[in-house]
Image (cartoon, rainbow, N blue to C red; front, side):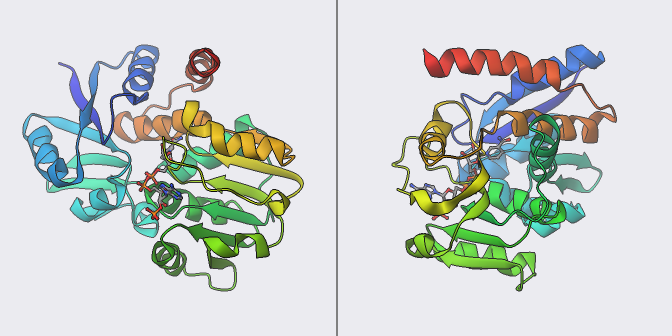
Length: 279
Ligand code: NDP
């Protein structure tokens, strides 16, 4: 009998996760059913309980529910605890156990598929939501240099910096002061500003020589930031499609104990994404 999995988020209609997990299941011969469930904040807890009652064995959680998901877990993995955010839920006897594969997924894509050496890169992280919380500890562990965090709501940047606990290396700053921060070797856009909102203007002088610009979103949502980065002379411009596939593979491995091959799935999605974005 197939096991039930799902991704919860709001909005969720365009999520690629069901397609990715179906491809991993075909590749590994695992029988599973994985669907997308639209869950606004106020309905998430109820919908998750209904999913558990119906035999749900695991779930992914996406925007804007990752911090709420962490609060609903009976146990957190070390990386989910450090992030204060959960993107992977595993059903255990007492309830849900929370993990976070966003950071490992991003670092695997950047250092593997994209061939970047992250060590000592002076890094600017835009955003302090669930995704930023997931990737920040993994970037620090991967050996980046100083990490500056800028968020539209400054209190969330402060809270993330406090949670990361490395005051000499992690620096929350105001968005209005972004032009005074010097140049960066790596800029990661972890805001959802490209999704229909106006993307905030950034100064050109933010990018150092051979800097990499990474947007965690993909498709049309990644266009405003990556267009800015290209125009500003970034050496590498990378969207979040590779991270998406790698974080999904980490979740899949967590649930099924088998690591799927990510390259064929990434290539298929990239061909589809390029066709959609340029159409
Ligand atoms: P959240 O809703 O938790 O956080 C959104 C963040 O974006 C907050 O920091 C918010 O700031 C900021 N933001 C929103 N609108 C604006 C704006 N107009 N100007 C400036 N900042 C803004 O979302 P997530 O962190 O979960 O997701 C963020 C992005 O990362 C999404 O695009 C998502 O698709 C992508 N993502 C990609 C993944 C992948 O695998 N490729 C995995 C996870 C996420 P404030 O705090 O002020 O509200």
